[in-house]
Length: 291
Ligand code: SAM
Image (tube, rainbow, N blue to C red):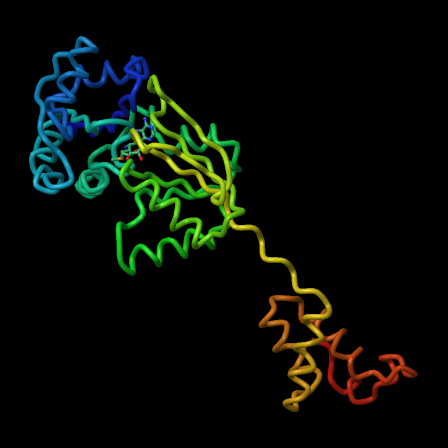
C-alpha cells in the first residue's frame, strides 16, 4: 500500500527537455516537493499539468518536509521531488529526503533527464570513462584550498559547478594549483540560446564577461612519471651511505619510489658489484635472498 518517492529531472534551460514520463508522473502524484512553487508552477503550466499539491522543499526546508512526505507515502500516496532545474539531489535538495524515505522502508524511483554535469562532461571531449563530480568548490578558507589540492591531484576527469560571479576566481585558483597546461572545458548556458563551450588549458582559457551558469570540466592529473634507474641509484647510494644492507636499501627505496622491490634490488646489487665482477660473484648478497 505504501507509495513511491519519484525524483523527477526537469529542464536546465530548454523546456523541450521535459520528458513525457516526467509530465505523466508530475500529473499523477499526490504531492510535488519543489524548491520554488512559482517556478515549478510555471513549468507545470507549460506542460499542462494540474498538480495535486505543491510543497516547498529547499536547502532550508528539506528536513522539516520529511514527516509530511513519509505520511503521504505511508497512506499509499506518491510524491515527486523536483528542483529548480536538472536532476534533484545533484547539488540540489533531494539526498536527505531519499535517505529518510529509504530508512522508512518506502520505494524510491526516478524519472531521469537533464543534469548539467553529465551534459558538460559528454560534450567536453575529455575522458568520460572515469570522472568525479565535485559540485561547487567551497567558497573560502582551508576547506577551499584542501578541495583544490585534492582536485589538482585527481587522476580522473573532474566536473565542477560554478556561479557566474565566482567563475574567474575559481579558474585562477585552479591555474595556481594544477598549473597552466591542464586541459579544461568551460560550458555555459547549456541547452539555452546562448550555449557556449570553451576549450583550452588553464593557462589559456578565456571565458570573457561572466554571464549565466557554468560547468567546468577539468582533465585529470597525468600519471606521475615512473622513476628512472638514475633516481633509484641515487637513493640507493644514500641508503648505503647510512649503512643499510643491500636488502634493506632496496626495500626502503622501493617503498619510497613505488617501484618493484626486485628492480631496486637488482640496481642495488649492480652498485655494489666491482666492474670486474658479475653479481653472481657477490658472496654477501648470496646470503641475502632477493625480496
Ligand atoms: N541539479 C542541477 C543539475 O542536475 O544540473 C544542478 C543545480 S545547481 C544548484 C546549479 C548549477 O548547475 C549552476 O550553478 C551551474 O553550475 C550548473 N548548471 C545548471 N544549469 C546549467 C546550464 N544550463 N548550463 C551550465 N551550467 C548549468
